[in-house]
Length: 206
Image (tube, rainbow, N blue to C red; front, side, top):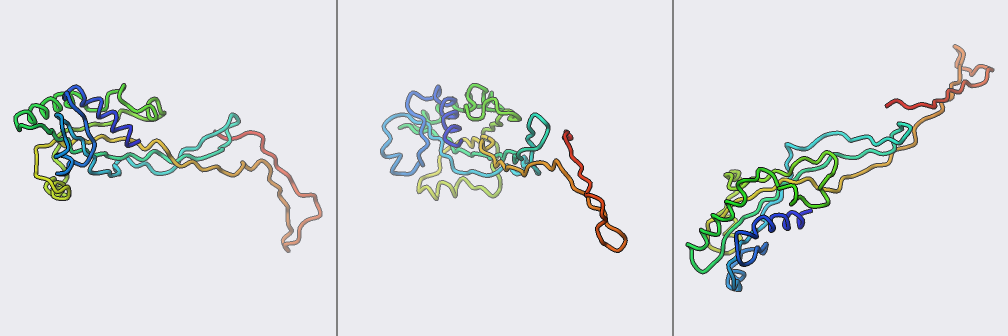
């Protein structure tokens, strides 16, 4: 799922740059090897969007209405990208960032034709939210990210795409109870001599 979101973001950003869209960590060594104008979209954070988490499970029924399995709800994750421009001149980098911003701002969600095939048309899957240049959470410092990468602070766009994970746990359930045997007992607890009463159920509640 993550690599497919990478590809979708790459297709969105590609018109902004004549060179490459890279997902490599923008370290000093990487910058030294770069030979063409580049937009770098470094995936630096993956967190579950707990506000979207659902409780319980969905029941799947057969043609008779009997529950045959239970499916857990989808879990949503926020993929955060640090988008930077790399050329030989700061002015050209600013132009690249401006072009990237112009391409991303019209979209509050990932365009339908960019949604990965594994998620497209999935039941209950709404649009995939996309935000750009929204102030990051206080717990996230861009300076710390650049320090960890061993590079110098550069202008960047914080791009976040929220997506469900396509694989969800599915659990089989035991066959439905279709027959119940009832044995009566006297007040002394001794079973009566009558044959046990058998109740058979042929219909299932929805």
